[in-house]
Length: 223
Image (cartoon, rainbow, N blue to C red; front, side, top):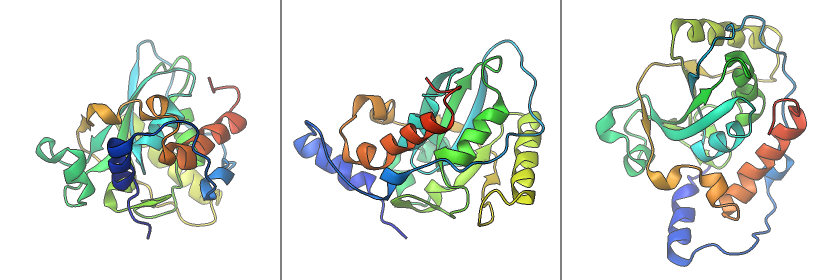
């Protein structure tokens, strides 16, 4: 299990700041998308924005990937699965609040479908076969979880997980769970972290390779 890297990195950032390019090598530099099939059953396009809530490791990474998807109008980093009273970064990081770091996606279903968002989620945004761990971060707050916003979303997500399991899209079983719970936005300094901190070491090591891999694998829906 890897230690949580974000806290010490944030402490360093606050103490000395980050300036200039930060050259680094690491496993994430070889990030690539897993080739998986599209969903067989999807939600129909409808007018107006829809919402999806997904958890899969660090919300900086998830936000970075999905804000580059055409049809996504906004991505908010936050917490889901626990109570409002404990939805703070320090408390969630203690792994005692039942929250997962999550993102809320506002998207136009006439441009990108819920099923397509799930395909990006499973194939590149995170590894759905690692339990309570993504990259350098470990703990239940980094679990793989989908928080359906409607019974229809739950049906699509459940069917897609079954489809991927049946086709053995991954070498290991999918551990993603469907959960319920309110989404709470994270602190302001977590929002748009990728765009505001392009030379932050965590972003350089883990997130930029993910975004590059997404663009390479999904050129028709990337922006």
